[in-house]
Length: 341
Image (cartoon, rainbow, N blue to C red):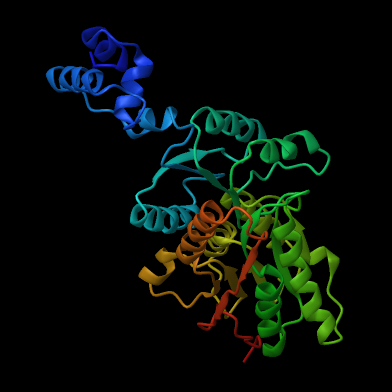
């Protein structure tokens, strides 16, 4: 069995509080007592954990990182960026996954408080409800620095890192419109999330900027999963007339949509044009011509960790929201191919 502080205390004939003071180099310990405790530590080959050292200080070197969908490559990149900066600053990262469930998120917040972490980086679950004020208040009651990533919440007074989603989809839609497309479908994602609404607003603004009318029946909201995009795309493909182009509002929607298109042996852009949001490494490996709006997600993770470090070092710093810009990478799938030519 592992040696504990209580084992050291018993052997040195002192309280476990005294052992904690010695481990944390407190000055409030007699030199003779300190030597006795250190001898016991050496004899029992005890190695105090960073967490144990932190308990007596009500502080640890642990940062909490909460993501809603750990298998999504987007959040894998967030994790990479956060841990890269945390490692350089001798901070450990405690990772939690909520599976897009608010109940799990509530549980995580309780666990985070028990671990006395120094700060929290979080992408909130998609189940958020505007009326759930009690849950939002829980963030403020934690009394630790918090940085929100990619998604915001109502009543938020914390720092955050976000992408300009409206501009990203605006640019993608303008590209298609300039190519000659008019009948453009957009897979909007989960409309409970503000970012989903922002992206669809970008689509609408693009039409309006060119004095064109979009079709409300071309806007589809469901969720941000591959399965939902696959189902929705198959529904769209049953129309008497195929749309000219499709925009998918995240990487999972892109994969689900492309799966449905390929199963029907539809060619891109000959049969239907396509633009996705979020870079997908697999598409690069396959050397596809799929146009995407690319976000530097690893850098987003780095920025989140650096912003948290600023908050840890400068408590009176004003709340900051950093807005990052995505890059439209046109590879050819946006082209308008006139049928019959």
